[in-house]
Image 1 (cartoon, rainbow, N blue to C red):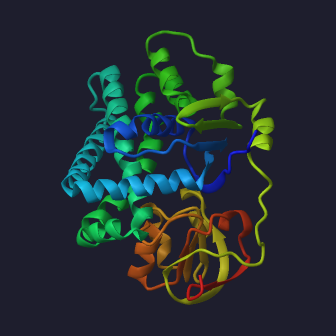
Image 2 (cartoon, rainbow, N blue to C red):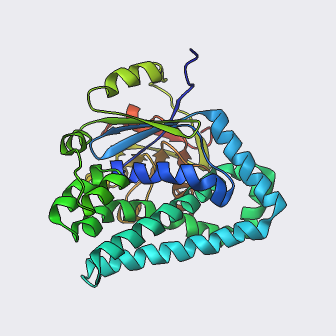
Amino acid sequence: MNQTPWKKIITREYSFLFVDYMIGAYEKMKSLVGTTLAYNLFKGYGKFVTIYRIDEDIKQSYLQIEKIIISNQQKVIGYMTTYEALVKQAHDIIIKVEENQAKNQKETIILFDKILSELLCYYLFFVYMGYAAHLLQVRKFLAIREDRFKKIRSINIDVECNQAFQIIFGMYSKDLGELSPYMKRKEIFDFINGKQVNRMVIEQRKERYVRIMKKGKTSDYSFVHAPRVLERELPKETVNQSELKGNIAHAGLAVGSAVVLFSLEDMGKVKEGDILVTPMTKPHFIPVFSKIRGIITNDGGTLSHASIIAREMGIPCITGTTYATDIFKDGDTVLLDAYKG
């Protein structure tokens, strides 16, 4: 049997539940926005998940986006409007729950679930559109609407919704709030409807899990079976430990100490003159940007958040290295040559 050519793409601070929502989005994206991915491997550990995909599947998604733009640009503009409206609706629910203004707990959860399930289809569409900016028609479309697209891509809705799970589901019960980041959507609604859920399986997901999509069909592997599945699915990755290459997001040269950021909890580590190494920059990293000399990310393209921030600040930036956070450790001396990439 031929091995799936998985390639590491990103590491994110996403919960098991957010991964479940993403899988649901991939299952319905094709009919809603005209493109999707059929292959994904999610390797979860603690609060983080590393996502693997295959190149041909991603390239096909880029081509589908370009075809949609060529055939009907107004449709894509409509997607922008729909996405902005869904983001506002999700924000409104989060604020209501945080301020204890949600009158009907179950109805609020059902509405949030419906909005997020649809919202993520558009969110993922615009993520891949940004990565597809090397294609001529995509690049032309984005050049005309650069400001609006930047605004859309700067919305941190994935992080906000992921962080809101415990608050939104916790208003129903403290027990559900604590369990929800490690549950499937179906399990949450089983819980709300008084059905039994397997707490042992849910608790085990806090440590480790693997979820694999192949041709749109998802298989789940538990704490016990995850190591064996990973050994079968993922070849041993060899990476040049002394030199890492990526995309030039903003040219320049910088030397400094590496500081590896995964989440908000890491921001206190950043010192003046550091080189920021992260899976991807996020809007809530803004307080540390004034201290750093350069940015290196695992993923992202010319229109990623890191690229935009680097150009605005005039600091060197390399994106799309894939393995930066695997190789660099806090305090490593880094030469960031964003002339050569």
